Image 1 (cartoon, each protein chain N blue to C red):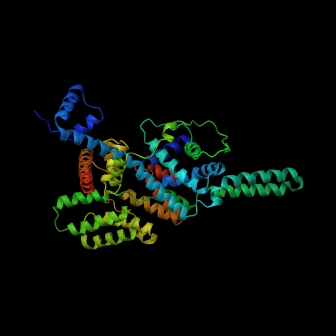
Image 2 (cartoon, rainbow over the protein chains, first blue to last red; image 1 turned 30 degrees about the horizontal axis):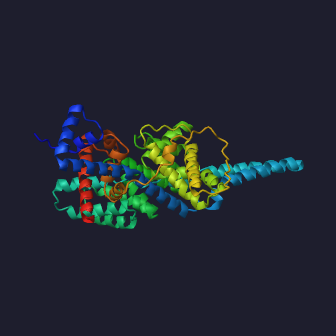
Length: 276
Length: 191
């Protein structure tokens, strides 16, 4: 009797996870069933394409960071040649001490100042710490929207939910101003919808990206105090980063200490506190 | 934080594809990598290009199940950049080229040489499918990459996306079906 094979069966075959009897039956079916053979080959191609997409997505991410850092002047000569400059400075200082003993005290001061400057320059500024730790939150909203659409049976909220989906699409595409507009439209139309808090949250991150920090802070301060919001830890994390960016170490420390007890942010919060 | 803990923390964040860790790696390793390339017939643009490539190679390596970091992450990244650049120089076949081997630390192991020189171009068909996946909106893209590329278990995926394991299984299945349908449609449109 012919069996209907599903994705799990095809993947068991491709991953060589079938026992001898299952393998024999599957191979026999493939010999007689051209459609199954085509489906197996197609599935194999799709899986290989997905595997290839991982590094491709990462490459895009690296290119984005590279471009941002280039805009910030990271690759300018003075930065990239720092290592050689430091070596040259040290050598020059040492030569100076051996040749001019009378200037030993002054040279020592110079060395101390150089070392002090070097150490100071190695410390991360609040802005650097913010840049190192800030990244946009991944999209966990689309699935919620999909589920809501399924629940409501495409009822009265469909249009508002579509605005919200468009908002998150713009957000993931990096079109933050358009995302903010769509989130605002959703908020006006959806009223008390349970996804309104999500819209506020993603809007706040989009606002950070558009450099409207005070508005983002205002939104996140409300969400960070809302125990019913599923992303409350995430809201606190972004709020801590805003405080950090504003050099409000006290505020940031207070939140990060609390986050250091959460599963998701424990490591990041502890690392950041170590850098203060 | 010890080197081992720092390595582990960075590797874990790199596996997740965190943007912030890429910045951290730039600040940590780029200056020395760029110096090596520039001291060996490379330009500033070469340094920028090859460091990006090194990061991608590193990302591929850390996602391999058997991956084990045996040196400081900065040394490892330097070794990858160095190997990529030396391979490039061989390709460019410049005669009379003198390399400035400024490595004082020779304790790092240039393992996974095959990976360092591997061709990054996948078959055209797979690249096309990859590009289609990268255009997918919503959560399915991440779930499919997590499951098929990063080989995360359904339990890990459930934890990452705050699903139940049962829902993660259903979601993975639905995402794969939907994506295959999309690929079929695009194939049909191209013919």
